[in-house]
Image 1 (spheres, one colour):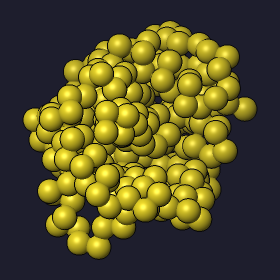
Image 2 (tube, chains in turn green, purple):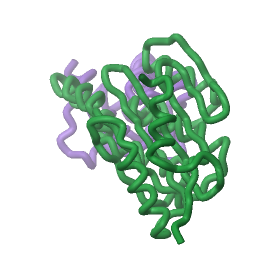
Image 3 (cartoon, helix red, strand yellow):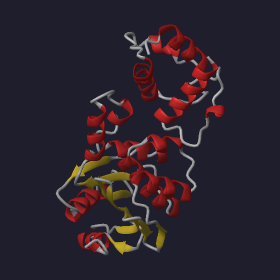
Image 4 (cartoon, helix red, strand yellow):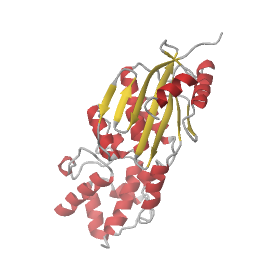
Length: 200
Length: 85
């Protein structure tokens, strides 16, 4: 019998606003990405010095995951299925710029988008499946099919999936925690409705 | 030498993004790696870049860094003896 899965909770980070399935958590008019990310870090009272060494994409992923995992119990086998459009281009450009003088090792280590999956796994001690897909635009079908495949095959009991994009200082984060707990039905339609709400 | 140590601490804090840390928080003989400041392997590479960029010292033998990056005092001694700028 086909098992049904639900969107247990979700988080969005875009244009200075952070919200989850319950309410708006944080709102800032700060335009500078680094300042914005630091203000969210302070707001959440995070104590994780490694955060300050990360690139913008990883910081966004850590903050989004922190918000979801604080509010919801999660398993160490929670799989991570992320996607975006601009890969790690923001950091790739910064690294390329640094090579004109002294190439920065600290930037180089973030010149792959899936590094964020490692950062999340380290912080939350996850030992799980993960994948980072590059897509033209938000692809609900891909996220739904891949996540469901992992859940139904028994490789994982929960999936954190979604969209994590950063380019030219503009960020667009939408992460969902998928489990068998009853809540919003996990479907392409639900994913699209949640992602595109206020995103058009 | 005192000035160089303070300068080094300021550079390390900035270069390695040691947020919420002040030069006074780093002891001159405190280990930079392991139990001390807790720097990692990527930080070690950044310190090699810092030596070249700020003091014109190019480390040709990476193993050398283990002896140099022991503490602020050790780094300062090495810089004083080898700096080209």
